[in-house]
Structures are given as C-alpha cells and as structure tokens.
Image (cartoon, rainbow, N blue to C red):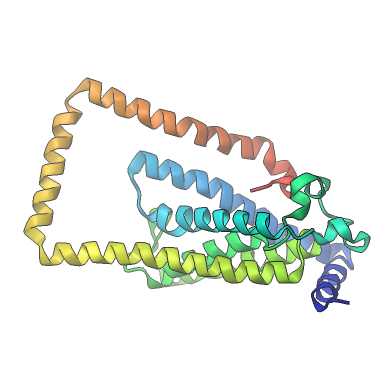
Length: 266
C-alpha cells in the first residue's frame, strides 16, 4: 500500500479513536480557522475601504488571495480524488457535498492548510520582523503579545491540517504540500509589501521636502474636494457600494455558514 495512504489511515484512526481526540481538530483547528479567515477577510476589507488601511492588505488579504488563487489552479489541474470519497474506511466524517461533482477531485493540495499556513507565516513576519507590527491596523507593542499571536497562527494551522486528514478530506501529502506552498506565499507576499514600505520610507528620509510637498499637495486637493457636497456624497456612495456586499457576506457567515463549517467551501 502507498505510504501516503498508510500514514493518512494512521492519523485518521488515531484521531477518531475516541470521542475526545475526535473533536479536537474541529475546536482547535476548523472553528478558529473559519472565524479568523473569513470574518477576518471581511474586516480587513472594511478597514481598507473606510480607512485606507495598508496593514490588513499585507498580512491578510494579499497572502489569502494569492494562496486561494494558486491552490484553485493546482487542484483543478491535478484532479486528485479525496480519500474520504474513494475509501469507505476514511468516509465516516467527510461532508457529503465534498464527494459530489467537481469537489470530489479537489484533494491536492489542501486549500485550508495552504491558506492557514500562508496567513500564519504572514502574521509571524508581521509580529516579529515589521518595524511597526500591527494586527488589523492595531499596533502591537508588547513582545509577549506578538509572540502569542505568532504561536496561535501556527497552532491553528497545524490543527487545521490534522482536521483535513482526520475527517477524510485530504491525504497527508496534500497537507504537507499545502503547508509548504502556503507558507512560501505568505512569506513572499509579506516581504514584497514590506520592501515597498521600507523603500518608500527611505525615499522620504532622503527626499523629505519632496515627500512633504506631495503630502501637502494631496491634502490641499483633499480639502478642496471635502468642501464640495457633491464630492462627499459621491465618496459616501462609492464606499457604500463596496461595503454592502462585504457586510452582507459577513452576516451570512454568522447567520448561516457558521452552523455548518464542515460544508464551507472557499
């Protein structure tokens, strides 16, 4: 038998061997993952739309977007069947909707694991390697708080991978490749954005007058626009157009999706 299948079966049987360990991956993995990933994404969008916040893009939206896009492309290309759909010994806990149609063949790599590790790495980099670490644009000054946030990111990412294996959604190799790819995306996207920020800050340090002039010009134009009722009205309408679907999806998550997290498809 394939070593990957043997290892997957071993994890599946060990985790589901008693009622205590059977529920651990849900409460320590899937539940905090879903509460952070989707509502966090909507919160980040709201902050960007309302306050032009940069930080949520760097540590949440960008790694999430690139990880999701890459994984959807690979999954559709590889077309590997989910273990819980092909093996009766691994099918006791998988949501039936994941074994119908196209979903049945989206096992490799694990998207949940990939996104979890992309966000965990980006969060770790933000907390430990940023000159001004922020969490959803809230400045985190305390070192212990930064370490705790970093730890929780990896903790949840590990247990989400265990959940995907122990409930028949993915093979062990799906989660390993997902973690490597996702972690790489989280690191690369965060570094690119950080390099851009540092480059701009260094430029302003060397060209302070020019940056100050640009800011002054922007502010003077902004003040002129802000005096116009039509401009304020258009700005408000534009923000509402962007916010309404985000707020709708946020409410939908808590009113509907939250009660059936195993069926949520990203």
